[in-house]
Length: 523
Image (cartoon, rainbow, N blue to C red):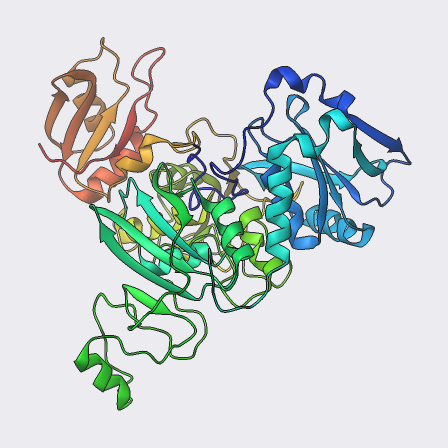
């Protein structure tokens, strides 16, 4: 079972879960190049075979196939894991050309790594009988799932159109709208009913046809909604149709937006057209019959139900075509203290909530900055924890920017060090898949958690270092069972923010640098 690819933590491709058979082991990879019979042609000329380089070792055939789905029918796939390369065969040159042209202007990513897409110097992808895709269940399943995605029909339910979804390890809340966002990636969702059984959150999700339900099961089973938690376990329900009586935060019939909510007062108000009524903690059904407004963390800008299958499939590939909504990873930070702010300071502060890729302090408005995170849900964490937080004497504002990326200055362009790229920084806290750091994210507090303290450094040395950085130390305590960690309490939250910025990665000894984060505890 694989559940390590986070649906909300990966901007790259969403790979298949446990329904996919394991790929051949690395002992076979040395012979992969011998499996392929390729008709050599002029390199760079248009071809329906696409060459993909720099793929991560663990990438599956499904992830490679998902890169091609938005552009047309995928007819063959071959992954050469030992060589970090793959070949994808499209049904025609037009589809292949569209894909190559798109990725010429927009970098493709698989599992967070940039991959390079170009025409193969071969016209056709052939494998010999021994290593054909008929003998490779992983490739075969990936191609079948791709076909299911692009061959949807619009019937109204039936056997195996209803999926039963169990959410395991639910550290963060999962709402009906979050499920709608995720499952709408694959195709049109008709109905959802959520409930709790045996202390686990479960849902029944109905698609219009069997192939869409099958594609959703193959694509999403075993995936994590959030990093290292909220794992989806999917099976077919015995039901062939869901009977939804109410449109509220527990159930929703997207084919009938006029159902009552089940709350008499709310229903009577809606009936007489009281549009100003607010309903705390209730996600009102969208009465227009279009997509319900998601209230959970933005997924990755995936198209919702009602769009074409090929557009919906963009979500699985972590990409978008021109005109499609894009996941936004760029934050606009305003009302900064321009005497104090630096790119490094913002990298450290926002790095508590995600892996900062780039920072730009605006040249003509230095109390404003753009901060590019690696994943969309990290922007939401930063907004929820840092917006309106007093930093360097001013209440900063943190919102989503209209920009999709932070542009680096062109060569020779004056910048005065206001723009920095951190994509290769060793200080990223969340680059390791399933990082436990995601489970220790807290809002700014007056108490800081310290780690990586060498045994040669004592309490007074640490307190002196913080005092020297301008912090007013109120209390300090080593962890009783682990002296590599400690808590330090400062005079205020604002002081703690300033101390974290100055002291994270502070050199305590020749080989040890201090790690600092906000703590939920007090001393």
